[in-house]
Image 1 (cartoon, rainbow over the protein chains, first blue to last red):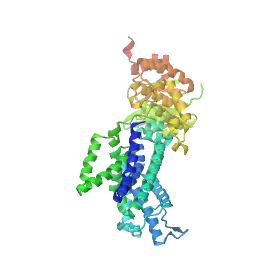
Image 2: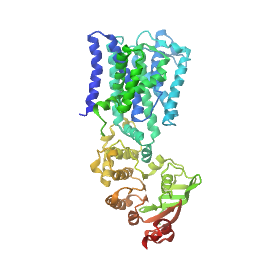
Image 3: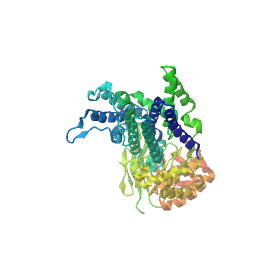
Image 4: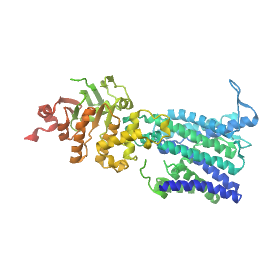
Length: 327
Length: 253
């Protein structure tokens, strides 16, 4: 078995073991931390799909994270105030069913990703980074100035949304839901990465000229990748909102986009488990260093610099070495 | 004479004051190897780019297989059957040799489809058959699992040709396939191209004169963006303009 596969299995087991241990010693806060790490990992896997596989450096993925969050916020706030979301031409009620909210979050965020991607992919390189950042900021300021759903104050949802057969208010059960979704997303992404589409997308990242010469259109591949990527990050946004039972425009902030990217860089760009490792380490550092000083980001910055300078392939490469060519 | 499959009509292209292509016309008929020679900077690669797509001519037309492709993109031309190899190897360097040829086969299939999102590409036997066949034709079958960036320069040239083969094109456009191959390598490839012309005609840009003279049915000589002569090997060898411009007047004294 490949070293990386073993490491990946250990990471998943570790992510599962920590909250189970916390449950035994009755530390619900630790379970919440682990849940946060898992949700951030999903967001990172989403961004990694376009950044790692397709080489599209998007600094606007907070947009999809926020859209996912507000999908939950808007649907659930209508459900808790018993007002319909839409009265005409057909009545749409709010809902507090998680699966429905997820579906909604994925649909809306992929729609936005499709439009933002179609416009942004006319550019590349630094311009692509800037234009995705601009779209993210646009949505951020839109949310701040839209009074219907709390504006700057955000929305408070009093009760966590429900999942058939589970008590989502129990931290460990909510963790279970998020963990299962992470596994599902990882499975899907690893399959797509090995598929014909994944092969072509990776080919386009490495050499657009070559792809055109064999008759494949890089731009189309990028747009599909960006849309899938936005959908996954949107899903994580809905989960994050449910974790906090609160959404605010901060979810759209460019700092959020930066954080998602940090997960990937920390763990290893383009690696399936890169963002999972990155998010877990990020949360761990936030917990450990945050206790030492309010300015823990200074230490995070130093660690990030260290990774970028001395371990370009992230922590995973540090442990298992450079990726070998494989099918 | 049979109808040309590739017909370049009065192509001109300028970069500022530099005329890279000056009213160029040339044809490629089935079964032939048409070599394009000329000194460095004569505009050979510029011409290839205008034929393959990626560079729009200022004036003139490119006809391919009875169709005017002047306004078509690189991708559209590739799908119509223009198989191109690059002067500087243009491959997916992080991929294995096998993955590179499978990409070619995938491009030839033309669509990825819904299944293409979940079925592992490297277990798709239809793609692999095409890919492995192309690899063994160029003699790279022993390197299928090697990372492309670890190949020697010459092997990359062979892989370029293999990728073009997977497209089973109607025309090959080869930009210096022999460059850097070494004596034995070029001899091998010469033998291979000799047979390949039966599959599809080749427009061959090449500096290796031994190869050109032994392979070409016709030769066109490009100097400063102009075709100064077109003819058989013997005609070109004895053409006085060509001798001064390119082959060197004093060589055989």
